[in-house]
Length: 258
Length: 245
Image: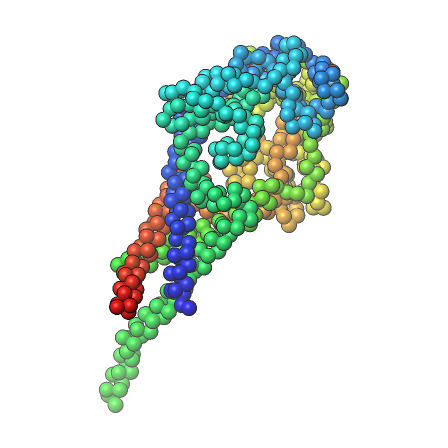
């Protein structure tokens, strides 16, 4: 089996994936950054100032209220005061050890606050979006990869979908009202490229991804065989050049003189 | 002609294609280890807030900020948490137009200054479970100062340990929290990343001219290889037909 045949047959085996790798790789380079991040049709508002003067509740008050509500002494890791849209409510977001969901407390009254509603999330998304079109629907995202590679941030989240030609969708935190991610068709294209580039349709993990390892190894052999295929050709060229150049001129003269 | 195109174009991009394949395989071998960070650490959760020590209520924060920074200081969030160095409760105040937060002692209301390099070293040593001593402490103030190793908030201290794995722990100078833990696995990952994305030419991927140009040239190489094979395939089919008839 010659290097030529190895190069040919292995090259054919990995041809389709090689083309996908090249097309998606170049695609990553061509996608415009701001569009892919969804920043072009966003007001990009800075975080709102927090009305800390209105936050009359103290940390011990919060701990007592939580103890009453939860029926146990809470291990408070962090209390964050911020302004929650819509309506600019000053809110304490309390992170407790051993509890994945944070607690939300009205900083003025100490009352427990529920998650933002779908209507709240839509209002927040509309206030950020500057494109043409309106909200077509809202979804509740609770699972990783529920929308493929579109969103891999904190869960749960609202996904607010718009009717513009870029298919913009904004992911909104139900706890803080923060816009967690802005996505559109550019991101969809990027996700398609990513899926093709890393065999995402077979295995979402990159670590020990068998298709990547196998196809990569075959590609390596294909390219090395292409290089090795060139070696006998190089040797033949050198031999041909030596044959054409003949014996050295000085020796020819000496032979003639004899 | 296609044979020559395939040969010469393939020769031009041979080294980069080799880099692409080797680094691509490399990603799949070390991805989780590299991004998961150093495991010889205690990786402790931040200590719970000592609520009973909190004497300063959040509504006093604006006046404390104004007295130190003037009327221009506008807080966008106030976080009560334990300081990573000594566990005392502190308010970490994010402000409009400022990357660095203000840190206020939640018991006394006094300003908490940024940690020194020695204090950052103590925090890192507390976390690291290996035997190696600290080799150096660096102040990281610029993006890409350490290549692709750290992308988080700046400034940050980088505490380097003298072990063979090159462990380094990144510590916030404002809150004493440990931001990242890295070692040689991440270094390898970054080498692969640099080779894969032409990071030695341009750190961005969007609009990376080297990436796009080499990709296009590679496509010419692949297509010329396929086209080169066309006549050979035709001959095989023709010979196959003539053998049958």
